[in-house]
Amino acid sequence: MNSTSESVSLLARWQGRLAARLARPQPLFLGPEGVQAYGDKPQAFADWCRSHGGQAADITVSAKLLHELVCEAGLPLGDEAQLQAYARQLFGHYFGAPAKSWPLATWRVAASEARAEQCGAVALHGAAAASLQELADMHQVHLVRVQPAWAPVLRRLAAEQPEWAGASSAGLAWVEGQVLTWLQLQDGALQSLRQLRLAAPTQAALGETLAELCVGPVATALKSVLVCGYGLDAGASALTWPGVRVLGRLEGKAPEPACFEERAASAKSLLPRPDFLGLRLPRSPLAWPLAGLGGLALLACLGLSVQSYQGLDQANQRYQTLRAEAAQLRAPVAPPKALAAAGRSAQAKSAELEALRSAAEVQALLLHPWQAVLANVEQAGAGGEPAAIHWLALDYNAGRQDLRLEGVANDKLPALLMVDRLSASPGWQGVMLSRFQTGEQGLVGQRFELSAKLRPAALRLELPAPEAAEAPKP
Image: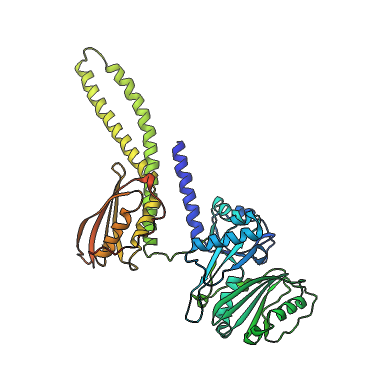
């Protein structure tokens, strides 16, 4: 019965995670005092997670918890690993050894004919910075994004102010009390990013800082400067600066919710999208079908497992009875009635042993790492064109650890590439195409059947990167 309760607990956890994935994200603002929903008081993130288990959160981080880095053009930072290593080295140099473990969010702006590639990193510090994901996982809260405040503000203004964003040179000042984040755009692309500190949280101090930023050759090039944010002194009178437009109220105690609302038109490739949860890969068209298939298989296995455990308890009781009856039948000369009873007892015992074997097979199916298998199939099949492979059937023998997949591909190449990718992956052996024929009965393309031998202990959620080689010819 203990195993039955563990299965029910596992099912409850999966239901909680699925509910969190499907829940509508709640926008939260993370500052030095903690997180707050717009209009509420700040509280510790652990307390918020404890009272919102099974929900989703979209977190925007205050500039007071961030340190910004813009890399010089021309540095050999071709991939994310090199960019993060370079950023950690600089942050550690300026802020000490603890800074090397701060969470990082990197961003890039693609190169064009007029400019080189721009890249940078944002470091998140503070007591709650390193434990956001751990606290969310503990309370089954799904984190959709964790992004710096200037990023959604920039994308929103680019959508609402297309003339400002498309100018040859434009500026954006995001104010959070004495912390000023200054961004400059050129032809719709981010050119520079700086974090400054005002002399005082007043509009007069902000005006002096903006005047210094707009002095010199840059001043003549700037077409327009937008100012938005919160935290300035409400007692100071509003000032008018030439070429500067103030959006909203700067004397609020917290940012207005509309500051971080994005529109579909704001998704521009020239605007950075830093995320402390890491880069997001485009979802494969096979993600939801495979997830549904895996969910159905898991639910079926859980149901069969509960029934099997109950049958196992009954079989153990019956086995003890059979042992007592067998002891009575162990006589030197058994009469005909005893022989008949022994025969019936042997048949019953064989049936009970068969039930035990069935329960063991169901338990093996339950404990099989389906998440890694389905993730590997999805990643290996995503190497081709979108929707290149449509899956028809999945069959797995837990005793022999044999997997069979049946699907339809547009041509032979996606299936062959998938075989090569899985063959080079840990936990996959003997991957081969056992059948390949033209689709029939309404199926368009090449129908194929793939078989493999799995080693569950060696499976990994992420496949190794494919080697740069020529694609196999069908």
